[in-house]
Length: 527
Image 1 (cartoon, helix red, strand yellow):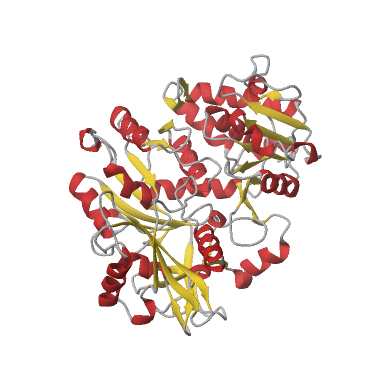
Image 2 (cartoon, rainbow, N blue to C red; image 1 turned 120 degrees about the vertical axis):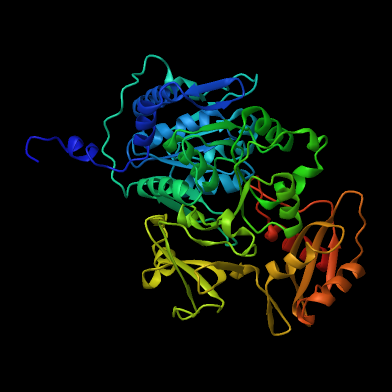
């Protein structure tokens, strides 16, 4: 290609996520892309402000490959900053807004982030360690409230002042360039940084259309926190397809119902806890939710009783089970509505961009019906763990990404989630799937929410322990729960201890935090 510049060679056929917005803005420039509170952006306006922010970031000294951190709830500032970083090949590093100062310090130092933008209401989270973050050259302030911007902090909105051009930044971006660095919670001493590429995010569009059936007329409530890969997937899918998102600061049940009714939302994507809890909201029956075309359930299977209730309320709405991992951007499997009635306990078949198999502990493929580790390959798989070559090599051994999740697959290719390997309870020489016991607990009268954990025990090694939340107005007794489980489960699977509590700990995306339960009740047993 004589006579072409390096950038021209790159831009003529590249897979760069920021280009999705350019193309959607060209197709539907005046359509509203998203709104947050009293701010709304058409696709043309969104692309223009993202471009100005990209130029502002470059003036600040941010270059391709730099890590740029943010600690914030969902807001328009977050997505402008994120998409601007992708347009210049920089790497967003979003932090969970529930993290404490030492956890924040670790991630900022490990990622070597050059800039760090923090929401006004979260400034105190970094107060103890701000002066120790020596790699950060600019601290930025996201002003959502009335507080004055502290001295030494940059207003994030200064990145997209009118003085910056709305032209596309000319930066070479390759498909395998990193686009995001997301730190997993995990069970290890330190979280691992997952590097997802531009190709990974491009792959999401294929899956969103084919697997989730999110197309141009789709509208969502963007309430899952944007530091979570599921939220980034959904927002990318909407922007790439030309849909519409109404953004929440954080998931709020009343707001979800109001937005769904008033904005005619077509797609819900929530963890089981929200589907379980929403019908108990005051005046729930007065909301019109008939615009919903698809309700997607991720993070775990919803109790059958919950699904039955929703299907009666929304007979024309499709329901889907979804499984994914940050390391797979977060693809994996989904169960389509047409299979939901015949395979309700399955997480479905592989997403289009992935090939899945089930391996034993020696990485041999297992026949249908055998329980083993789910492995995957395809363009949705991460680049690897940041600064963790050995862990990446171990995870990618034999040319397959090892998920650490135990499943079985039937002859038709439907996958059934058994448990996360770390959540299997080893009791009396037997292995117990916490998920299997939890599924039984949800059938127990009066139980609204449940978690099963193993607690240290000198005789059993681990004691099968049920932590449950009673439905409103119901009383649940330990002996009743145990008696119910004894009728349906093998003796070694029956909980030997039942703890009734007011609520189970979950992160903002609804994921059950079993580590917190294990720590809390193990400490109580020791005291």
